[in-house]
Image 1 (cartoon, rainbow over the protein chains, first blue to last red):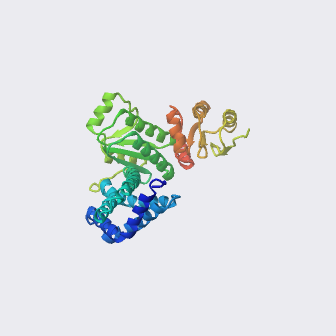
Image 2: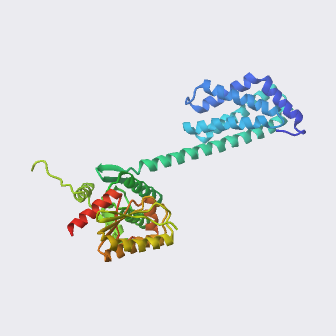
Image 3: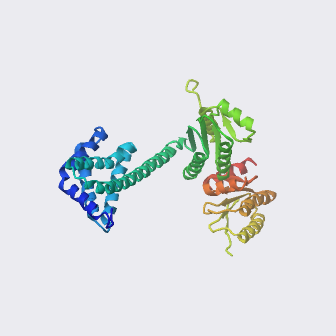
Length: 281
Length: 120
């Protein structure tokens, strides 16, 4: 919005924003509040937009562009907040674009034909700001998604202590290479930290296993063995057993048990413990 | 070249590796260990690698060689304290350390050797 050619038009726009401040700002707040459908209060909207309005007004009269940076930062903050609060991209962009409508309405009312030249440039400027808003929104959403993915990964790969010296990894959901890698590392580290001799990998909650995942599981078991611990795989579903057999994956001498209970019993026996039935005793 | 100390505890020999392993160090260790097993009449060897964080295929093979060698002289070998990263590396290198027994730490390794010596 700089350059000598637009000088008068620009000044005109800047004047309009200043002279009709209350009307334009009021209409802007009204338009934005309509779009948010009560998820944020009018007061909050007004505070946000007043700040933006001041910055826009200053940025129009400002030649060196320092206010422009401030304005972009403020817009970035607002759109990041909107993204976290779950607003749609359209709703977020409207917060900026509604200013055009508010200004246009005032321009129409004033009946000043010369103002339109300035309005076109002003409109282009607002478009630019809208795009910056959108970019910040998208970046914030992306961040939210990657944070959630990370949390989910941590949640879905727990290592629990079943007994003294016996760990269990109840795996639920689809196993992919990345997840199996995380499982492998967490399990080996926990084995080393706790000095547990047995680990039960329970895949009852895993719907499918492909070659790569099976290879990863095998590597995990081999690595645990190298460290001096033994892995037991339990809960292999019929379909998975079929897949593994059909793919010709050799599980070798790795102990597999039908259920977590059987695997626990195996590990207890290996630790030199016996399970005695309560009724018999 | 630094030498790796070999300590005698009862019937066992303890090799605690505290430095980055180099090929010559490993070769020297093999020779020293063979002599030491014969000299002391040890029945078991414990190699503690809890301080080692880098292994290559040569060092991986060394564990198998030492185990095979000491078995010829009637001593069992247990490798203890392997770090998860080292274990992953060895698996990725395709080394399964056949014939080498492993334990999570020194204590479990000693217990393992004692129980297998008791059976003999």
